[in-house]
Image (cartoon, rainbow, N blue to C red; front, top):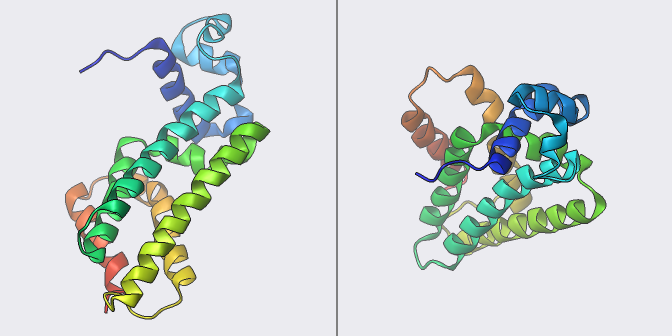
Amino acid sequence: MTPITRKQEIINTAALLFKEKGFNAVSMRDLAQEMGIKAASIYNHLPSKQSILGAIIFEVSVEFTNHINSVFDESRPILQKLEAIITMHIDLTLEKSEFLACMNNDWVHLNDVDKKQYIKMRNAYEEKFRTLLRQGIREKALKPIDQEIMLFSILSTLRTFYLWYAKHKMLDFEKVKRDLCTTLLMGIRS
């Protein structure tokens, strides 16, 4: 395993603090104190609190984008594609719940350039998901339910999964993953 860089350590610690307190409530001094370093040394790695937030959000946004792009181009049945996307969301939630919390709650604090890029990535992601749902309806693998309702139901559940799972960590994660995926797909499967 590659040793963690100081920059990544700053990003990881900031994500945890932003999740716990919110972006606005955390100062660079708070972050430095949490890490046991001087605030000035953070600036050697990242120029601002907003740049740290951008690094957090884009780390997971890029993972989501790369994954849906690869699944989208695969030649497997639509239900397997949807299951792969849902499973990846769940896995990433377990691995980086504080990053997802920042993405969901704090993206509005990105600088204008990063905010536009993030919204563009999010919209492209949702459009690919929407396209897969339309394909599933056309192929009669999914019920002819309004695709916007399907998209909203699945993504809103996945986007807030980190909140629910934090309260239910005693449950077997693999079972939660299987059951959540089944639950989300059974309601729309033909």
